[in-house]
Length: 250
Image (cartoon, rainbow, N blue to C red; front, side):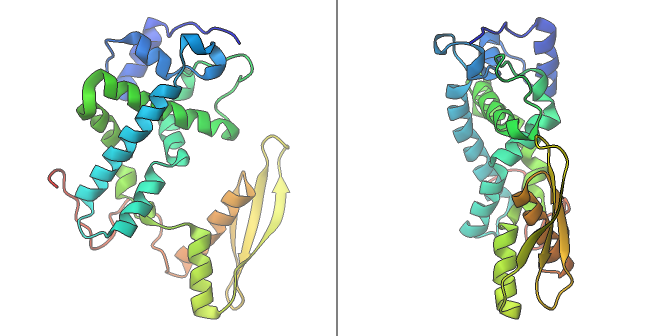
């Protein structure tokens, strides 16, 4: 394994501006961005910070949902929590912040921007939260999380269940049949494929989803059908009806 150099001062300054936190402990920030492939275990990597950050993220998101959705029951809060702390959501935050520019990896991991490396970008977001918590306490971590997850928490889509599960239950209740998914087209190179999936329910017009994985395309197709049939509201940033957002208080 190769040893990676620390962030240059100008890189750190650019990153600190993006995340809104200035670190006194610069080595901690460097460690939060260091993948295990970049140096041996004795020199440290982000894994311990990731462990801590995962718990801090869960606590802050749970608190945010508890105070924002006062009429939501435990089931809805759990669905929202699981969605918001998922690897997919964390990777989205990483991409919005452009963290791939700063992640330190070894020569065996040359590109962390592709879809297959989304888990690394998600891990780095959690490790960064852990580092912010150690640097500035819970208040600093909460500020970072609210800034980057607040709009997601307010989204109607954040309270949704798995689309395929929802569609199957609705289809069984409404028509007594199970939705059928089929791959209509597969295009692109092997390292970056694109799947077009069609979902069909007898008696309804089919819907189509397109994504880089078959499963994601199925989810997209199911989501489109649920929205078209009015089972789900169309994806938007509006707060679901019946919920009131509070900025503070328990």
